[in-house]
Every structure is written in C-alpha cells, then in structure tokens.
Length: 255
Image 1 (cartoon, one colour):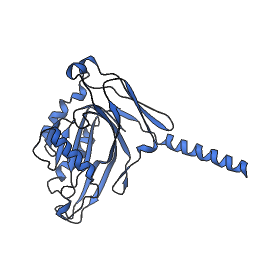
Image 2 (spheres, one colour):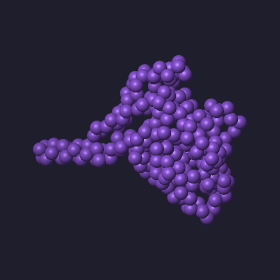
Image 3 (cartoon, helix red, strand yellow):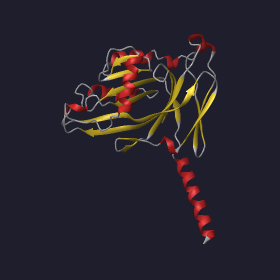
C-alpha cells in the first residue's frame, strides 16, 4: 500500500507541474496603454466599449484594459463586473491628475492623460506620442518562466530616467483580465442590449515596489488565475507604474 501511495503522490506532482507548464503565457512589449472606466448601466459608454475592441484588433502592440465601476449601479442595473477596487482606482487617478470628478466613459492613457473614452481622435493622438516608445524613458522588462513560476526582472534606472526623476516609488502590477465578455443587459439605461467588453479586468495585484535599483519579482503560475464576475480571466499583464497610479514606464502583456 505504501508503494502505491508514493507512486500516486509522485504522479500527482508530475501532473500538477505539467499542468502549470502547459498554461505558460508568452509575453510581448506594450507600446501604449488605454485604461477605460465604464459601466453596464451607462448609456453613453457602449461607443467607448466598442472602441476598445477596435484598438485591440487594429493596434496589437497596445493594451486596452476595461475597468467596470460601481458608480451607476443605482440606475436599475448592477454591473456584474464592477468592483469597489476598480472604482477606487478611477478615483485615485482623478486625485493624481487633479480632476474635479470622475465620469464614464473615462480613459486614462499611459497612466498620465485623461481622455473621454469614446474620443477616438484624442486617444489615437496620445497613443501615437506614447512615452512607452521612448527608449530613454521606457524601462525594459525581462520575463522568464519555469514550470511553476514567472520571474520579472527590472534593471536599474537609466541615466536619462534619473535626469527626469531622482527618486522612484513605482509599483509593479499584475493585472488579470478576460479578453472578451458579452453581456445581455436586462434593465437600466442599456436595457435590451448585448454588449461586448474587451480585456475586462478581474483584479490588479501589486507584486512589489521598484525604487530605481535592479530587482527581480516572482509570481507562481497558479496566482495568475483570476475571476471577473462569474468568468475566469485568461490573460495577464505586468505594468510598472510610478506612484502606483501615475505614469506607466514599462508594460508587458500576454498573447
């Protein structure tokens, strides 16, 4: 019996290890990020929601992230993707960018510019000038993996970056999201509509701080799993962001 138990335990370990290995992601550099704050109960949001899909299809080197917020849940339809954490991120951006209020659809480009989420012209313009394409500002991020974990390596700040900012207090975020979710809305301002939501954020988790010196971070493959509403997330991104809610200086996304 003991021999059978040991063999079974060995096989279960092999199965678990291979399971994580098979789910390894491939990552690519991100040249620009649009974070959309939206709500299923917002009648002016569907054009912005659709535009996120357009960016995703036509600009594969960029990353769109859709954060469902709770601010319109009282209008007769509770957004089933919305969380207080998403709403707080939007409010933190508003405070950091010295805005008078939050609204939907609201986009933040590269963590530094506030734009109406459906304003294609301005979003396209800001993405074209993205500082993530500036090699003097962008922090190269190296991602390596084994059967159980992902390692994210960041170098020391460059001389060019140090010339812009002497002190660094940046957060490395792990963002878990669902690439596509279709929702049939039965009440509220969008009642009767079925709307596609793109790269819907289920959670964003701080992996640690980067203060300008070379550093490595690790996260297990298991911890890349997440939920958004009753759906499993299936994509992840790593984002290095000054002040936790300021300019983004590095990003990689799964593909």
